[in-house]
Structure formats: structure tokens, C-alpha cells
Length: 386
Ligand SMILES: [Zn+2]
Ligand SMILES: [Zn+2]
Image 1 (cartoon, rainbow, N blue to C red):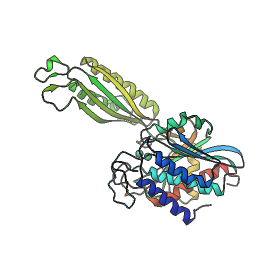
Image 2: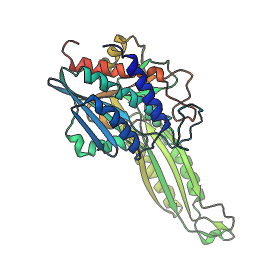
Image 3: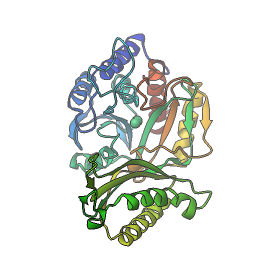
């Protein structure tokens, strides 16, 4: 079975565009989940679970014999960014839009349901997982913590992400680290406010905030080896309020830090906290910090990457092997760090605007290719004659 009937292809495009028109951001994917559930039901999966780790959905299709459980994962959430496209199916919700292509990923995975309902695997089972809250880095961990997940322990996990900048339908793979680890850091500084005419009567954290900005940004250069990529991006800085009569007494500095490996990220975390505490102490400021939106590195299993490459070749798709890991993060790392599996990229078109750009829109032409890639992988792992 190497292609879908036109009827299913059209249904997946309609589904993708419906989802695009009705985006819901992380933790609010209620209607999206209901829509997916209604789509899956008629294909009579052996189990249909919902409310997993929030609004997550899982459809399980069992084979005739015992065998491994293969989990295929996609994401339910859109982004809190305004869409700038003028399409017949543009976002109907001001300020929210599917600008990461999760609408397309959902349609690709949903497209497996009709195939699996007609020809279930010979052995084992397939779990179609629609995961909530990927964009905030929370969803994968929430799904794993849910007791419903304990009833479907997978042996293999796979997911894909569409990638603008690559030829439509090309398959991008890498053994080992595929996407970087990252984390957000919020540092709050507390001194004392005073009249602007008497700054000496208070303790203004502006200089310390500026020093922290400089010092933390240069940590990758000072303490990370050249072959270990690491990056610190300043995200937000604020001291006091625009009131000219007041010397401020508090301030906030935020960074996103990223590294190819989890180990280098941890090492940077320690170094950053040390620097911040030194600077705060030198300026007699109290400070606290909070880590947010943590993403583990996605580490791909070598044999699973071989399977992906073979599947792509069998489907006549171009295979691109990436030399270095991607600098962006994906919370699928939570799965690959616990189960054998891999994340791969599917080219979304060289000219397509980047992910999270207001003019991005998922290309429907790659829907069927994504579904068939997953189907091939399942076929390799669970069917006798493959
Ligand atoms: Zn995204
Ligand atoms: Zn995404």
C-alpha cells in the first residue's frame, strides 16, 4: 500500500485547513482534541484514550499477534502569534495561529487511521499520539506522567517536523543528537527604589542588570569547548518603570540558553547562576531565578534512523543526512531519552517562510508523504512480509 486514495487525500487536506482555521494554543487544545477524536472514531481503533496529560488523545490499533508497540506522535497546539496570511482558511482567532505546522502533523498522523483500520499490523500495536502543549516544552512530560500512558508503554517512538528551507518532501535525518536542548531563565533583581534626585538613598539594579546581560552572553565563548555548540540569547530586559522621578528598585533579565547536548546545557546553567550571584552580591542586591520551558536534546537511535532512511528510499524521497544537530528544540526529546526512537524532518519547501513566522503556512502537498513515511516505518517493524 504505497499511496492513498484521492478520497482520503482530500479528507486530510480538508482536516488540515479546518485545524489551521481554528488554532488553539498550549493547554487550551480542547476543540482540536474533540475534532481529532471525532475523526478517529469511525476507524474503530482498539482503544481511544483522551485527556492524556491535558488534552492529549491516543488511538491504539492492535495486530493479530504479540509484538512491539510503535508510537507515532504529533502535536495539538498552535502559537500565540498573529497570522499574516490571507487564505480562505486563515486563522479565525486573532493573535493565535498554526505557524509551526502542527496542523499538518496532525493530519499526517490522523491519515494513518484509515490505513491501519483496513490493514492492521500483523504483530504488536500502533499508538497514534496527539500530544498537547509542545510549544511550551511541557506536553511530552505531562503525557508521560499521566497514568493512562502507563498502560501503553511504547517500544519505539517516532515523530517528524516539517522544515522550511528544504526541498518539499525531502527527508532530513541525523543519528545521535538531532535537535538541541534549551531552557528559559528569568532572573529577578531586588534593590530599593528612591527619589531620582537621591539614588544614593536606594539601590538601583540597572548597572547589575547590564553586567549580567554582558557576562551571561559571553559564557559560551568563555567556558564551552569549540566543538560543543552553545548559545545564550537575551530575550527581555526591564528595570523599573518609565517614571522619571523614581530611581528603580527592581529589574528582570531573561535569557534562552541552548546547547547541542544535555550535559553542556547543565554545565552552562551552573556557570550562569554563579555569575549572576557574584554580580548581585557585589551590588548588594538580592536576586532569585526561575527556569522555564525546558527542552531535552532529541537523541536519535541509530537503527531507527536507518529505518527512516530506508522508508524514504522505498518511497522515492530524497534523503538528507545532517552533519550537525539543529539549534532549535523539540520536546520529543523527552520520548527519545526514554524509548528507542527518532525524530526526522520533512522538507516544507525552500522558499517557505520560517516556522513561527506570521506568513508561514503548512504545504498540503507533503501531507501524504508524511503519512506514508510513518506507514512504511510501522510496516517495517510490525508486518511479517516486509
Ligand atoms: Zn514551534
Ligand atoms: Zn513545532
